[in-house]
Length: 75
Image 1 (cartoon, helix red, strand yellow):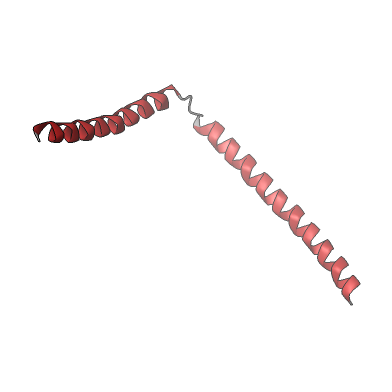
Image 2 (cartoon, one colour; image 1 turned 90 degrees about the horizontal axis):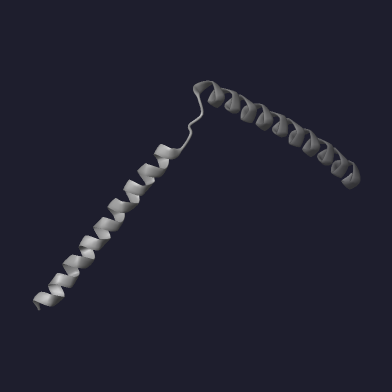
């Protein structure tokens, strides 16, 4: 019986070590990342917002045109 309880403890220990190892490796990888500066982050955010608003306007316009075409065909 002692052998069976030992293996359960070993499995639990290995499982905890795997989780701890995962977080240690994740932390090590995050230290290797080259993070953008505040200015780069701001500029890229502006680009994303401008493209999003532009695409929304374009898709809204296309939707309006198709709605008019379909309403002319139906009526």
